[in-house]
Amino acid sequence: MQKNQVVKKLLAVTAVAAMFSAFGVQAQTSGQTAQSMSNQSATGKQNMTGKTAADGTVNNTSSQGMEDRSGQVGASGAAGATGSGAAKLSAADKKTITDMALANMAEVETGKLALSKSQNADVKTFAQQMIDDHGKALTEVQALAQQKGVTLPTELDPKHKAISAKLEKLSGEAFDREYMKTVGVTDHKQTHSKLEKGSKSAKDPDVKALAAKLMPTVEQHLKAAQQMSSAKSGTTSGK
Image (tube, rainbow, N blue to C red; front, side, top):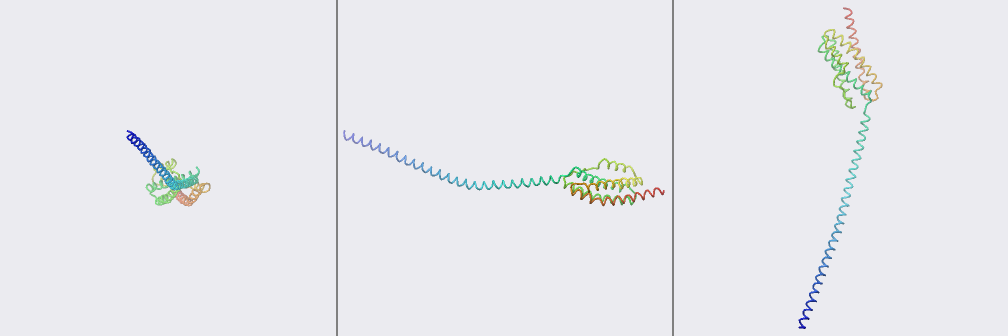
């Protein structure tokens, strides 16, 4: 009996010792696992920090690059706006361009009308010169208007429409006289006056230069028209 009790006690002590031993191993293992996870976490953080630093450098460079580009675009935009502002014309200069365009349009249109209605060779020659010279001038005015952002009219103004309508109703010598008097002389006098004013008072140098450039041609047309009108008047008086 005593031996059995001793054996039972020994077994109990052994079992307890085994349990404690197992708990110790488990605790040690848990500790090592925790330590390992802690180390891995620290390493991960270090790696992530390293990546973040590396990525951060790249990102900062990229961000700075974008900021630099943005700054350049802004500067370019500002320059463009300044350029656009500098190109804006005064109301008077816009009117000068529009008047030049209308005058040239009218000369081309009435010149075509004269070619179709007149039977006089000299009048036809004059009309063809109006189409050629004023057609070329109109192209120059249109180019300047586009450069300066000015929208030109696409049809004649009421004054020139009325002149064309009046000429449409005439024929023969009556047409020739009216055409040379109204278009050849009167219109060219008015056009020359406007060009002269523009060449002196225009604020924009390009507008001023074009007005001055067109003046000699208009002067030549005016002199030719005056001579033809005088000749016709003399012929009529002689009759």
